[in-house]
Image 1 (cartoon, one colour):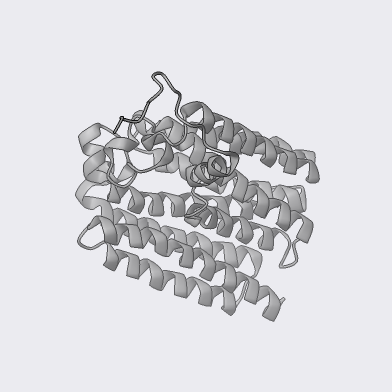
Image 2 (image 1 turned 60 degrees about the vertical axis):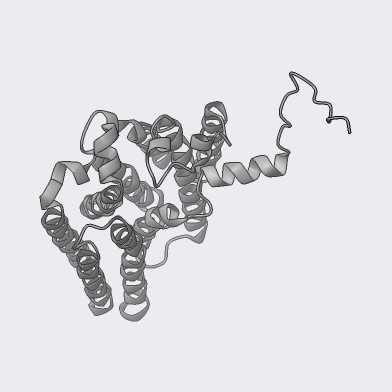
Amino acid sequence: MNAPQVKLGALPERPGWRERLRRYALLVRLNRPIGILLLLWPTLWALWLAGEGQPPWRIVLVFMLGVALMRSAGCAINDYADRHIDGSVARTNLRPLATGLVSPGEALGVFAVLSLLAFCLLFFLNWQTMALSVVALSLAAVYPFMKRYTHLPQVVLGAAFGWAVPMAFMAVTRGLPPLTWVLFAATLLWALVYDTQYAMVDREDDLRIGVKSTAILFGRYDLPIIGLLQLLILGLLWLTGEMSGRGWPYRLGLLGGAGLFVYQQYLCRARLPKACFQAFLNNNLFGMLVFLGLAADYLITG
């Protein structure tokens, strides 16, 4: 029997558009929407506070779409920045760029398209909010590269996620009252906490390849420092409630959130990567509880 003929120099078959979309969806982690949710909750906190329980639904919809688009864009530029690192980290070695399913040029293209779509949403808001968005885009673009230069990339992420707060207040009230910056600080510190938990998952790999993070900076004091930050977050959120005249439903939400913080400390007690990742994921419930308490407060007490 003759051997099958193979054409020398034949190019590999190009994936169809459906397969490309599937790969791009994996690139922006639509199959793991935890990042979208962690950005969404403080955005909703700010919208409800700025709108005193009744934010314009058009603005709410614009911000929800913007959250999904910008978080997805952030994943694309993050994987581009880490394209030479992800293959050496157990948690990330199957990402599309690390495995060659998506090229670096494609990742940049996805980032550009998603950022442009998010920018188009700003035309439904006032020009002041559009001006603030320049800071948000700059932080999103810079954050993925910070782990090469500083042990505090989580602070930059916190600023990027927290910037949704002043944007929300500006969109609804056309101003930035002191309450804005108290909530911004709480959001920044919250992101610092959960992204440190996230970095604890990769600490051994990061030490081996030279990537910097707060998990490495804090070292054996990581859990005490996280605990202090969690207390400060709760204090800032309590102050937010006092400044906005919130009542017992909001405080009940904070109490539930405090219980979740205690549970996260319990999960991370042995610093096992899987347990630290579970603690990171648990922050979605924290954000949801605070929002439910806030929304219930406006419904019940006005």
